Amino acid sequence: MIRILAFLSICLAGPAFAAGPLAPSGAPADVFPKPDRPVAEIVAPRWSSEDARDRAGEFAAVAKGMGIAAGETVADIGAGSGYYVVRLSPVVGPGGRVLAEDVTPDYLAALEKRVAPLGNVTVVRGEPHDPRLPPASVDAAILVHMYHEITQPFGLLHNLAAAMRPGGRVGIVDADDIPSRHGTPPALLRCELKAAGYRETGFHPLKDGAYLAVFAAPAPDRQPAPQAVRPCRDEATRR
Image 1 (cartoon, rainbow, N blue to C red):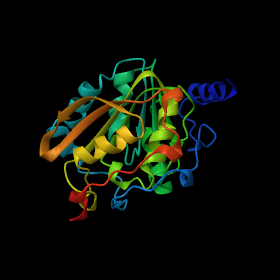
Image 2: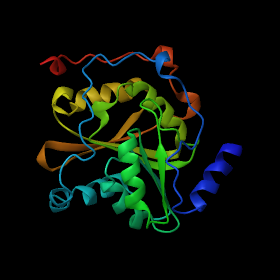
Image 3: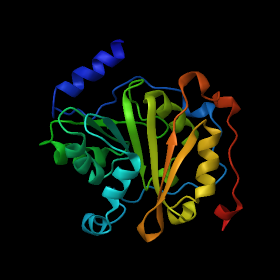
Image 4: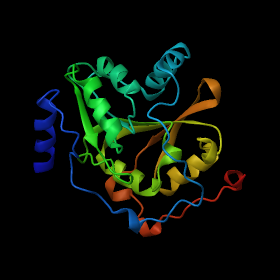
């Protein structure tokens, strides 16, 4: 309860951002197995130009596929330059909240400046294996063109699940390509999410070879123990 009250007090404070974690750390990274595949480097805060993404209708397609609604709390995990954050803000409205989470200090500093005029956005400093969000606080979470960059995906998925409200949705947008080319094959993604206890609820092809995969996070009492998680092997990622 104390953690939830602290979270609410930060949210109600408006755009006075500290880019700090909102909750104590969850499960540590070293209790999970490493992914049995390459992990791409973080090379830029944006996947493509915002104009090009708008012309392709990317945000509209993802928001529709995720069922984002007014009044919801939506977490953008790996928010980068804030492309989704500034577009989510009017969708969730004054009764909703956008949590702009990232781990890169330079990205967080730029995010704070960009979202300063928005009264329903909170900037969050996470960790590579833990978004540092309060338990049962999030209706929907998106991970856009960054899943292949997560060094400890099983840890991040485990800790993210604890932050999801019952019925919450987790959407992953990525290119249908191998991790070394900044993508994740859908079969590999499904295998890793299943290993972390997630259940796929939707799959939506997007333009330019990308896709949105939507999952239901496991309830806290149905999460696999970290030691029970088994990494997935996909020979396609070896090329």
